[in-house]
Length: 390
Image (cartoon, rainbow, N blue to C red; front, side, top):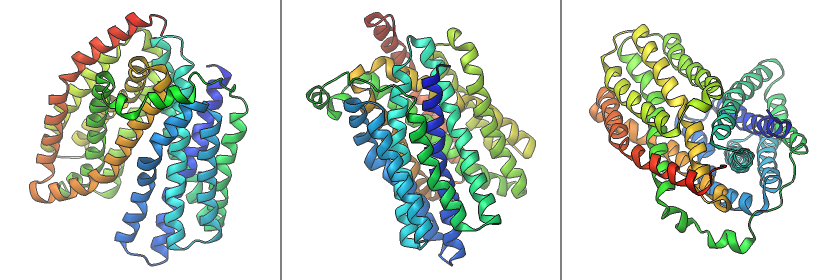
């Protein structure tokens, strides 16, 4: 792995861990202060709200200025959010901290993903790079909440927020090892490559649609496993284990992809993931205990864990080079909007129809959208003909 890529990934871990740690600490502090579960739910939703608003702007800035400027802005937002929570730990300030850390992490991540993708020399290297990059959230999802929780128990809330505020500053140190990029496009070129033009670009729209479909299945699983486990009479630890081994499986498959990257085609992995997800969602409501639910969870984790590296690799191939940042911003905006809105929809639908029907509905939609993979295959073949080296 090139040193610059290691620095990019380490920087992502630090700024993202600031957000994930704040996402643990802020709701716990709000509950301790006596705020209602509804108020805590609003606080949690704010972590996903800011990326919806900022991701596209981050993409445009990355296309114009490269890596360092958007990462510096993202770091500033994340640092300011954690610092505010440290200095004035009231509920309104915690809401501002959620917006700032969530928005800062996403602002930096768009530039990180763009820079990582542009360092690849061919499609095989794209798959390897984005598999490595996809491991960073797993690391930060552990470091941020674990260390923040430990510091809260030992030294209190201020120590936790001080640690979280320091994390994004480490991203700036790692950024010094990333070469500065001469912008590939002028401001006028980036302006002409508008968001509307990207939304009319069929290959990108197909990828975003497939990505949204599979991301929704991830959210469905996270939301419904506790519901289904409760219906089956499982303990909280058993339900937590089922969700935990799902995460282990997603990490494992992302470790495996770089070893097999030269044998994998993006469209093949996406088609396999979609069909496997559809079949597992059909089977899930028929599971009767922790072991059968755990088996479904592992298989589903392996299927969904393979998706992000392939989507990111394909996106960089079918999108014009001067618009990579905007395309990544659109993707992040769509996923965060879905993650913020879908739990409300799932709750309403689950109350009316039950967990089983919701699993089947999600499986049906991902199976139906698998028809788009054939067109994605042709898009990738056309992109390879235009640019054989990338």
